Amino acid sequence: MTLIELVVVITLCGICASFIRLFVATPIDSYTAQAQRAGLVDAADAALRLLARDLRSALPNSVRITTSGSVVALELLATVDGARYNDGGSTSNTSSWLDFSQADGAFATTVPFSTVYAATTSYYLAIYNVGVTGANAYTAGTTTAVTTPNVITPTGTQIKITAGAAANAQLVTLSPGFQFAWGSPNKRVYLVSGPVSYLCDTSAGTLTRYSGYSISATQPTSAAALLAAGAIAGSVATDVATNANGCIFKNASGTATRVGMATLQLQLTNGGQEVQLLQQVHLVNAP
Image (cartoon, rainbow, N blue to C red; front, side, top):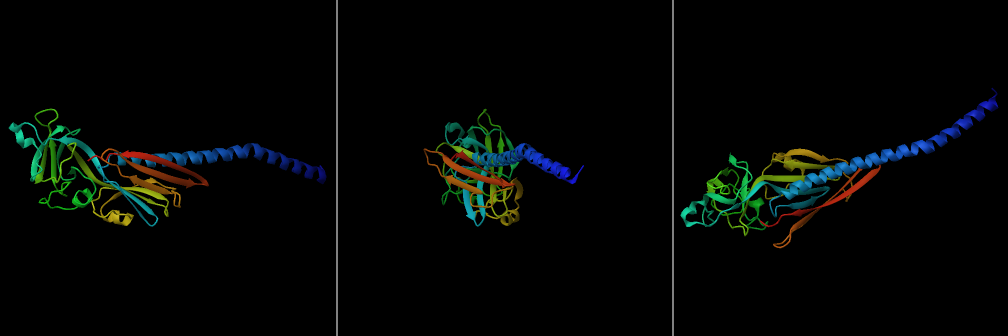
């Protein structure tokens, strides 16, 4: 084999390799990019589904959203159950009525909670939270006073829900008794487990869920504040885009005749690939 023949062989091999890359490498690169995008879509969809699930169970008029620097904070009061209370009916059993004129320690339901609950101080009962001064569960839930009427039971109130004499007439017991400020037009009463927060930090590229902390009149907008309040953190999404479109949360309050609407937009990016998902969630706003 001469030097000229060797050069010709090397040249032909290089040409063949270029053709092979053209027909093989490009599909592989496309598959890799598609797989990355699919993973980002799954991650964004799972994050938005979790957020939507919490929003659908939120106490009416308890969703609040604040932007602080690179952090978008969304907070809500999570409910675990709901019922309809009895505030009238047979005069032969007025003890089952919920009395709004004074502190009441027991009342019956006309539509029951989904289950009975042993005596606990971990939950709150809320009636007619409209999110305004004097009827705001965030400010009311921080107090331990039982002498002032309000829309939610104070911290430390013992709540017990037992079976009643009839199928729908569960007995709700409060210790100490509490005076709710206003009745609900639809006689709704909610069992609240406490606040839940989502912090989307576009500088760190993370979306994190926090729960298990106390109700605060001032919305916590940092991980440090939530952890100091005893919150438990759980990662919801990483790879959040580090720009203004990384997280966009909006809440359009409803009215007496129209439900509210939360708009959630999440953008994730990784390996040069980028996806952006948007989801809207109807919010119950009739307290």
